[in-house]
Each structure stands twice: as C-alpha cells, then as structure tokens.
Amino acid sequence: MYGVQKSSRLISLWKIMDKFRAIELADVIRNLASYRSRCQTGMKLASPDNLAAHSLGYYTNALAHIDTAPVEPIRELVTRICMFLESDVKRLCEKINLRNAKIKIGQTLRHLRDEDSRVDFSSLDTDLRNIEEVIRSDCFNIKFIQVDPKLSDYLDNESLFGEPVHENFRSATEDIKSAGNCLAVGLPTAAVFHLMCVVEWGLRAFAIDLGLLEVSVGRKNNKAKPI
Image (tube, rainbow, N blue to C red; front, side):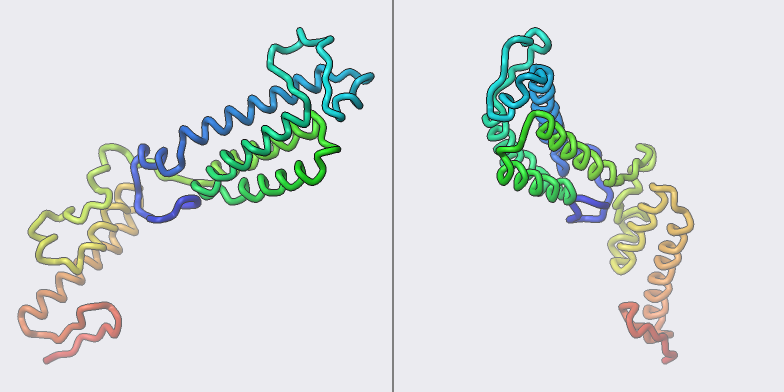
C-alpha cells in the first residue's frame, strides 16, 4: 500500500480516513479551488489595456460584476498562497506521504518566491491547478482492497480455528491469520498455502510429542531426523 505504511495489515474505512486525514485533505482541495477562483476572477477583470497594471499589483473594478469572488492585488494573493502551501498543503502531504505532491509544492514555492515579479493571475492559476492535479494523482495511486462485511471476521483473526488451537499452537498463529486474510480478499490458492503450513506446524508438534522425530522449532535449518 502506497502512502502511510506503518502496517501492511488490512484496516477499516474509518482508519483509512483517519490515516490519510480525509477531512484535512478535503479542506485543502476546497481551498485550492477557492484560490483558483480568485485567480480566474483576476484574469476576467484584466482587460488587454490593463494587463500590465495587474502584473504590477493593481486591479480594476470596472468589470467587478463578472464574479462576486473577492480579488486582491496579485502580490498579496501570492503571499497568501505561499503561506497556505507551506503551512497547510505541504505539511499535510508530509503527514500522509504524498511524495510527488510534496515535491511539486516545493518547486512551486521556489518559483513564486524567486520570480514573484513575473507572476500574474494566469500563471498563478496554472501553478495551483498543477498542484491539485498532482495531489489527486498521488491519491489515485494509493490502492485499497474492499472486503465484504460478511467476511470481516476472517481479517487478522488469530483464533480462526478456535481458542484451544490458538493457545496450544502458537507457532501456527501467523499462518492461520494469513489464511483468513487471503480468504477475505478472494485469494483461495494463497489461503491453501498458509493452511498447509498450519498442518505442518501441527505435524511437527505431533511428531515431537510422540518422540518420533527431532524437529527444529523454526523453518531455518529445517531438517527432520529420526531418533
């Protein structure tokens, strides 16, 4: 699973939303759209005769009826957007590990700060659109598996064969749990592999109990020798 990867185990939808800060992410996308709207309003207000004035940090109210979104001088808007990208968007991308978005934001911040005299509403709108697209792309690249609620009891269940098996065959715990996970996500062949391993652990214990074989506890140096 790409993204926050502290555990490879399956988790609930609620935990996914929490890990990936779904509410914060929605706020970021909404605020990016709001800033883009301001830029687009600025472009509408910029007639061919006053484009130069816009690039110097001024705007005209002559066509203010075009859009009700507030428009501010380009310099002030760039400052606001830089603060937003640095304090909100970049930090969120770091938290949920949106790597490409984080890189893109860093590049945009350097561009806006180093070439602020050449930034206009159009280029600023393009920068914000590119950031939004990279965030969405990173999110689309994160894959999850949806499990039928009827099979949820199979997930990460160490006691799938009951408590007596769980208590007496600790060495088989991981394979039992993995078999359940495989069944839950529709991988029966993989489940069979883990179930065969469970049988192996049982045979080892049985052989040792009967005193028929000297069997190593782990799978390394896995040699059975008649006694």
